[in-house]
Amino acid sequence: MLNKIIGLKSSNLPRIVAIMLLLVIFGISIWRISILPLWGWWPLVMLLSFWSVLILFFFPKEAEKRKWLGAASLSGVMLGLGFPPSPLTWIVAFAWIPLLDVENGIFQKKDKVSPSQIFFYAFHAFIIWNIIATFWVTNTAFIAGIIANFLNAFLMTTVVVIIHFVGRRLPVRWFFVIFISFWISFEYIHHHWDLLWPWLTLGNALAEYPWAVQWYEYTGTFGGSLWILLLNVVGYSMIQRWLHAKPLRVGLYVGLFFIPILFSLTLWFTTKPGDAKPVSVTIVQPNFEPHYEKFTIPERTQLKRFLELSRQSVDSLSSYLVFPETSFEGVQINGNVDNPVVDLFQHFIDSFPQLHLVAGITSYRILKRNELENTNFRIHISPREDTTYWDVQNSAIQLSSGTKDLQVYFKSKLVPGPEMFPFKAVLFFLKPIIVSLGGSYEGLTEQPERSVFKGGPLNVGPIICYESIFGEYTGGYVKNGATAFFIVTNDGWWDNTPGHIQHLKLGALRAIEHRRPIARSANTGISCFIDIRGQIHQATQYGVAAAIKGEIIPETRITLYTRFGDLIAKGMVLFSILTLSMFAYQMVRRK
Image (cartoon, rainbow, N blue to C red; front, side, top):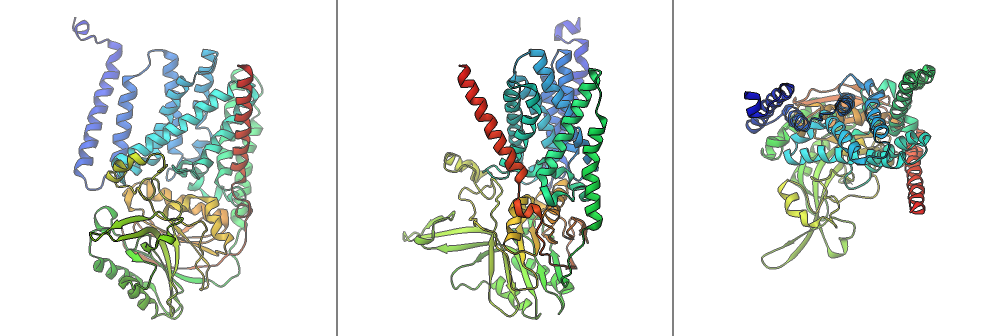
């Protein structure tokens, strides 16, 4: 009787109980986020519980659709758990198989192309992937972080829908070729457009085990993406052959899996540093929490810690001292204006005969009207109606002992939102929203070429934070003469979550691709040295102020990847463009 009154069926009871439980978990996570100054892992709990409730509300009745939902969920979980710092990296070798089976099942069931069905299941899989792997973005800015996760999942889903729409209208043998080429083309575009977010490039998943991907010096991370996709396609083909009682071709899959690893192990044990003289480098991790300390506590307090940590490790034999991203703010880098902070540290390094300081700063310039080209300038009009033009940069500088020569580099791979406004010419009407979310409408000024700091025993390629996940981009430093990379970053925005570990390990891939040693200075996060095999040394602890001292051997070798860059991805983009052009031509002819 009660069941009839409330419309409750016994078969729905477990789902309703699960929804209620998840709503409680969601409420607890929201409460914790509202009262805690730093949120840690709570955004993961919040996002997963929220999405699970939505899915349970629209849980399909048909058994086959439930099977597809389960398979899509499995793909999302495996893709998410395949990224650092999870030790389960190798599940990415078959993480796509359940989703590929969903796509094939929908096509076979409908006997026609069904983009809407594909969209639902693919979006579900990619939401799970993005939440598990990059939930920590929410710790930087709550709303913007949520948008980033869902928008990236939407873009991934759009690619899969296009693959389904095009691939299923061409001969069957072309489907997997289109799948691989279109996906890698998407990853490449994600390195180069205004919404650039290459973090979840499949080849990045293998950063957890650098000994397995030494061949990135030939292919870069897109070689890793190609390998992972091939393993999934061949694995799925094997399952289909088994279901149809055909020979499995196990040898093909085993060879495809193990030959690159064996080749990598050969490189791992045979790749040695060069014969150049080692250079003494000191790295400082000042550990100022960025949300509440870094940009609020007095500058004098910060300078004191920088000096104390520097004095602990610098001596007369030291060649380089490395400070993290945005160590100092408001530094004018043009005109005849002396900056007290720069003068202070110039005086400090002048006490050591061969010392160079490489530091990240927030800089600005006062510009004349004829200097506005290629800048993201801002305008200030005084009460007296005087107009001042100026721009802002996230910069790296090098100061050298005994000279006033200031070398400067402007960060040029900018984070969408905080550092640049995507598609500003089209979306100008969103300026108030961007500003309210803490973003920058004008954006920071970039530069077209990579600068290399010279004048010491190293030619330093200064890589600023986000730039360290761009392989071909960092090769520009090497082409301009860099013999070592210095990464300056601030990874405390994400709290003590996998974010700062992922950033470290993705940056270590640059050492493999270009065979350049790395000194990495994080405001807080992990500071360390990275050798040319991508192996991490002297890693500091998260949330601890520290200074570490080590040696770097300058490198001049040029790898195949440095020379030719992302050839694999560019080839896939070309193939994808030709395929879409031919497809469009055929569609027009049919009509």
